[in-house]
Image (cartoon, rainbow over all chains, first blue to last red):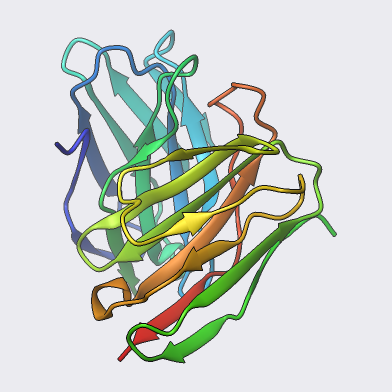
Length: 112
Length: 115
């Protein structure tokens, strides 16, 4: 049973455009939603995270939008740059009980 | 420098030949974990450890063993590797203490090929 469904699997965006990656979860006990960024040949690294008490969190060009009723959250990358080209993983956990479960990843390519 | 190290980074082996992938962290983290990454399947957890001598199965533990005798080390053991264990493996650590919201720090990965 896939607990976190991520889409799209791959994404090509023009430089300066907006990249949007979506995730949906099933477990209503999840209360922590991070995004990890992975560059080729490297391990994933935490990019940004949100708790369900807020609907949006912004850090620079990266924004997480969270819709608790729909059980969905998304990553928006504004003014996308070639240096943003990477694989992005959403994840979720129940902070008191369960380890992180990851989505299958989205391979983002930002082209000039 | 705070980091998670894995060795070897690349390994080609044959079916049935026991191997160990080492993982070490220098951040005094309580929690450590192993993942495998496969195309189209994302990151799947193999085993995790909340602290020394405490280990638990993740989503795909079959064919793997782990041990946590020291806080800093968490080796992954494949006693009889098979071709379906060909994958990219990541070790990760975090502060732990039951706080699943802690940032996980990943190692650089080990690419394993089983012929």
